[in-house]
Length: 325
Image 1 (tube, one colour):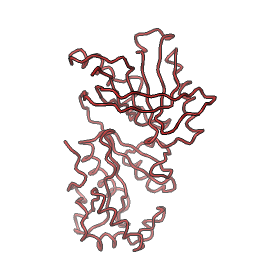
Image 2 (cartoon, helix red, strand yellow):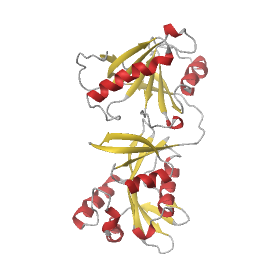
Image 3 (cartoon, rainbow, N blue to C red):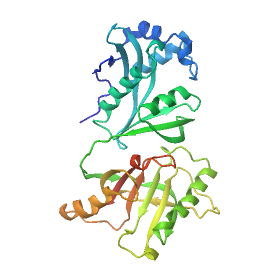
Image 4 (tube, one colour):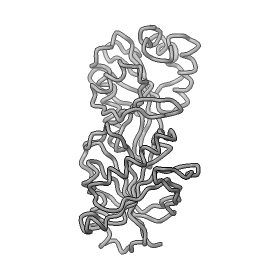
């Protein structure tokens, strides 16, 4: 089912509908209180700032206005943005409510309506918040957002929060083409319990070069062996990060490599990474009945969200099983 970025949604306190050009005056009236924007870098109570904000909201194709059910008046707006179909995530942002509706219950209902709608289609919803906007951070935390720490997003440092679906969805294998990807890589050979020592070297190299945008510099694992079935000394995995420039000689042990383009079976795992159920599903359940044959390549894990702040239950790993053909 495709994601609808401009639904009409209804709750007990408010309803949401698509933004239209005719909403300018009513929405500006709701936004015209300077205290709404006290902790926000953009002072949208000013007409010269609100005007471009409104035009971009219309052009986004994902903006909704919030309407108080009692009065019928427009009291704020929010927006879906940046649907990432390959990551199965969408952002909710650019949200505000008139100060008369602060206190939590209206914001919570607006976000709940938008999250419930999105999570019928995608696996996670993200919120991107300015590090200085304490009020917005607390609001996202109140509705269950788990911080994934600071990220460089759209050219600036921001806090990223994520809410992951709690729906129990059966695993589904999709056949797709994994694109050729240039990576910086370091191999771990030996005891799986010491993988973290190798990961630290890649992280140290990454930070030394300022590669902090996790959407641009994606994290991968090339799993040559299954730690459940080989002796610890025979275990082998490549720790990788996608790059768009060459890897210079370094003291971290990082080398440049290529993950070749390949036809793959794909499934997504949500939960603790040492217990990757999607990989087990593809290899042990799907493959024997698929009529497909394995290519001579390692299984590819894409660690969609990485960092020490991510709760284990929110970890997202996309698994690619390379196939012949």
